[in-house]
Length: 96
Length: 429
Image 1 (tube, helix red, strand yellow):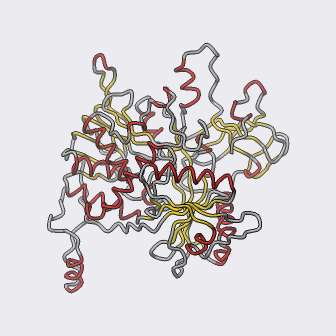
Image 2: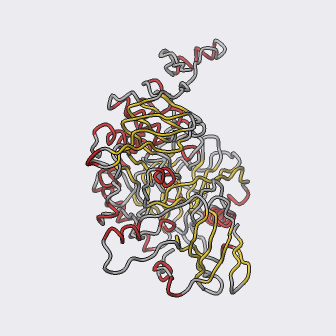
Image 3: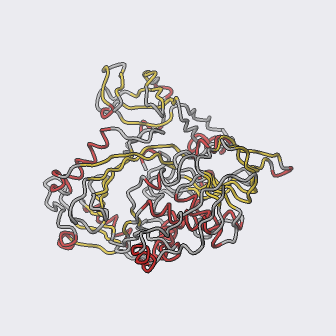
């Protein structure tokens, strides 16, 4: 069970949050080559170690958070509010 | 020390009877533990289901016996021993149906071919539907399967009740409207799959090398074609090879990273559970339509079940409690009688979740490096076809016709195989 310290709501159980994927990617500019978009959409570092990722506090303040978490120990090192300019496309979708 | 088992060690009913009468002293080791040689024609990294099956089919179907399978621990303890043992071919996309149906056909003849009792049990795989929309979706899927000559039947409520009396059809919130049955689906004893392939591969001349972890890939620059992989660095020294195949479900990104490749994969954990053994209550695999839950009863009597992935990137071979609670709720909602059954064990396996939910059997940008990866949570049922088509790719340097759609290039060229139309979100497949 993860306990995530939301900057707005305090420490909460993981069930209040929804994972929204790797936060280390940057969207290429519109005129970038197809290969850059392929890398952005499909390719992942998928590290066994520290990982920046998006989490949506859907059962709380509904804010998007950027979290640094270890993918083997699940330890959480940093939780920061996501600046609107860096929000991922996935956060605006209504996927599962 | 290489000690090949004697070739007289065929298993049979007569042999069992004879050994029973003579104190069980005549059995030899099922497969030989080998020490690494400096060079092989093919090195397969990963002694799981797909790695062992690839080695076996290379030797038996393609005549390539100079093969080593490297496993960082003992064989059979990875995902091949952690799944819920279900086999089926009830997919929707025609290319996927053909691939998994090929696998199911190979399962049907596997025990005879391997001379190993893998307890293949075609007890049927039943998908329940709880809404009209699901009924339409499953009917469409069943029709697609039947068009390709694969068995599929639609069941109404009474037929579901007759097949699985445990199901609470009239659940107030999620009434069951019917089901979609693949009669040839079922279960296979997963440990026997690892050992059956290992024994058959070992007898065909393949070296199975345990406790040999790959720490790097040896690369040579090869003229105009660019870099080429020519071997692997391991904890037991350098092993050179013409072809290196990665079959390391869950850790494909880590191994590919050694070659400087990024894959369209994230690693996620899937939990599974087994209850205390009880009398026979369930003789079909049941998948729940109102959530993500599937259950079957093993021959030992335990109910084996699982649900969705935990939902965030992890390499931890365990699981967290929210999903365990979710799965337990689904179990007792579907079959209220299960509320009194105790869960005996829970475990997790780390899997490659691919960007489109379909596997990857492919050449890579590096010559001499073959990839068998991205199985999501469907790797077990695909072991025979995955092994055969990967062996074909290695032996013929061309994709097997049934697995050509599973190449790595499909992501860059827009040919993704997304069964449910979810998009490039691995945690959602």
